[in-house]
Length: 294
Image (cartoon, rainbow, N blue to C red):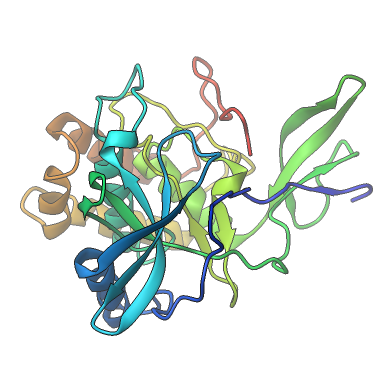
């Protein structure tokens, strides 16, 4: 690719800098349980505000039984009303997205819990510090084709006199995330929500606008649109279908987080993906890419 421009990472402004995390990122069920206990039971201390977020987002530390970690706290009281989502439900949707992510086995969403905090109930999620040296996942290129190792999203207006091709990496982690987004009906998959961590793991954040009964899928990850799903994804969807059966533990957990019609719509999306065995196409009656895209 000639003249590549790296899409800038998510810009976060807080009154204090993130500190070292003593609770390592979840790599197993045991470590995930430890992080969840820390997030749920620990003393939550607000350190600053992430000013560029569209809703109230606070940077915090949490401490419990000698362990300490940085985290994000999104109080329900800080949620801005949306015309198409019930008020005060975004925190529950974030936790539901984590539950579904864990059920896939891909571990794409950082550990996320519902709990009380200094400003009332809200979502608390493990802070992920991106790897500044990770290979780029999104780029703008002055070409008509994406080039090897990349997938085209579409043309983007760079300035008044120039357009460029927006591309994303042909990366198995992004492809898994594209499947997860289709499952949870993510209406806001922006570039700044992709956090590559040291060691090669990819995390995805900001899942408040999910699980709607209507098709709301908006994402930058359209590069595989219409292509057959990988065998791995088909196996995950088959297992997820069973996990969503009435009475199954995942289904029981989700009944506390989303409505019954939303749970039924989730089951229908999983079945549809299994039937078509293909990545979905962009919608024709709804913006396919979120704004702003980063």
